[in-house]
Length: 557
Image (cartoon, rainbow, N blue to C red; front, side, top):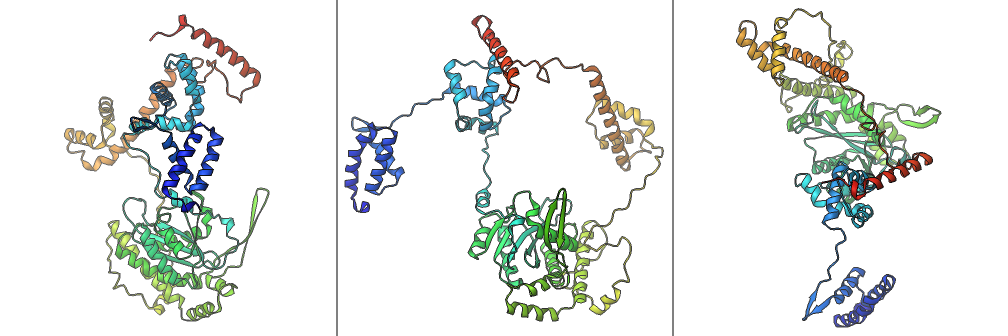
């Protein structure tokens, strides 16, 4: 009915209602808006805007916009700037609470002077208004750059959270997803990431290498993983990584009818299934070295292709059955160890044709041949890590690497085990440090000279000191003595710092009352103080403020 009213009729209705809307109170204006929306079919915002336009005063045929009176002027802004600086630049919500505490000391010491009207406005201002008034000040203080919210925060808020206790024995197809970084001891630059997906019900694990962290690569990897899992995927549980929480991965998962959830921030136990496989599978296979490049990713793909069959069909694992707490003790009970393949065969929700296909695939697998392929690819990946470290190792292309015969490899099993013999992709074991008796150093006769140089120029480096020593004694010192000079500098500077701290303790007396511990403060105590003491101090503080605020006692300047 409202949609059939013409535009001219709507203008007539607005012109009639505008006078009544102008003279009505707040509640009456709300009823008038409801009636106008029901009559014209307008949105409430548009109806209010149309009525306010009719309220404008016309002068000589021109509409003059209604000006809004400013409540907080330049004086209030200057006072807020002083309070904001005195609070060490806290946010508006915290500054709102601090104003009653900061304002009396600033006025008492003459750093802020406000009349009663402005003082009441400062005390009554809201946190949102504080942020709005100080908006341009904060931008200027931060170097002209406004802090922006994270791009992925909105997408992250849309994804529901799922904790470890929220799974409740799901059917096969619900996976936890995580990424493992192969950056070695540094996360600088680009390096390979392993995408790990673990089925919660059976423990079936799939791993794929990603050359870089990118949402589109994650989508392509998940498409490939869908063809590797024996059953259809039903849901994925991510962490809060921006490689997952973006406008590429989450919409794609929802298009595929996958239930998308995420864990809580900094709560790794919410993804306990995939975190366990990150250590027991990925780190056990790859170690902690740094891997990068497309060629290395191809070798890792061969490694994971063999490892997925070996782990899912032949490697049993434990699964938690129940957990309860008795006092301070947590008691856990586990199912008997079984492989993901065996769990899939016994699960009632896995279709019969999937079980039949898994049995046929199991009969064609040779665990020794799979293990031989794993060891061969680990050896090649280990050679890549050794070459980066500067060791002389031969590296063959990934395409020409031929796995050893299973029979020959089986003969070597159990015959070449040595102490401290890790796999090629793992870190080399560190040798125990052997303490040695300090021998006389050639720097001993020159310690006094070096101390004098440091006293004159504290910023001297070991290279500069070695250069000076080599000029005086060219036959004794050179670039090889750089390390021993560095160790000497470390000892000398530590000794100088200890002497400086001891001198400060000896020369610095006990602080006066109120300088550090606040015992000289006579102002009102917080609400947590005892009532009698709080009332006594408040009365004493009010008397002192009256005395200092008199015209004769007002601070000058």
